[in-house]
Amino acid sequence: MGGWSDVMTHETEFESLKNYPAPAMDKLAVHTFTNKPWSADECIANYAAAGVKGITWWRETYAGQDLAALRRRAEDAGLTAAGVARCGFYTGNTAKIRTAAVDENKKAIDESEAIGAPVLVLVCGATPGQTVATNLDQIVEGVRACVDHARAAGVKLAIEPLHPAYAGNRSAVASLGCANWVCDQINEPEVGIAVDVYHVFWEHDLEAQIKRCAAANRLFAFHICDYKAEPAHLLLDRGLMGEGVIDVRGIRRMVEATGFEGFNEVEIFSQRWWSENQHDYLGKIVEAYRERS
Image: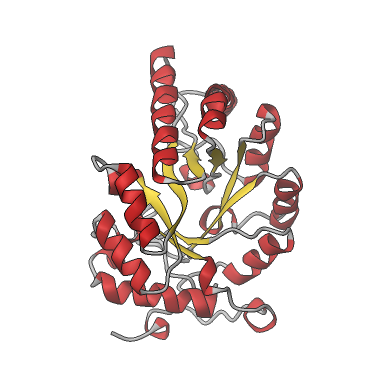
């Protein structure tokens, strides 16, 4: 298999690639869903062997396992848990649905504590048939109901704003500005934001919103991948860094200018890449991280 250049699909050369340093390898984390075909232990072994230092656990990856034992195996391999993905989905047209969502989030908080993850990522939900205002009110109410549980567990709650294409049924929080607004309403130090370049690269005031987020001490996580100009699937055709239209390094510069010292978390949903040899794919991830992130 070839390297990153074999999968590049455009000719964009962002200025940031020339005038801002490449990222440090010790800041690379990978979401386990990025390598969906692998088991939890395969992720541990292969990430460690590739020099990856951080792991973001997807709940689907560790379902049914002894989380304390899994945490020990990951830490023994030299991996630090960057976070857990994901929970949220607080909206619903009945109180029963919304209460069940809060209960599920508290369960996810407990899982995050057990596996040693400092952050739980929240995809906040949107219920068709409800107005945006109603959905946002329910999100604020739902996140607020989880704060005490998160504080007791030592886990931060990171609201992840999604691209507006998902505003109909995945998240009414469809911009970084909106995520900042939600955090303002809750106003608790346990509640912050996960910035994913896939979802926010298009925002005209992105740098200002990143600064606003960091100034309030709520920049909890940074996720990277790429957005293809013509994706084959809106959800499951994310690109490796360099395959799409995002100035990933330029956005990383914005994030790091605020003093952020966390991981650069690679999060790619891709039916194409899941069908490939995962060892080769991980090699391309590392190369794209070094060359285009």
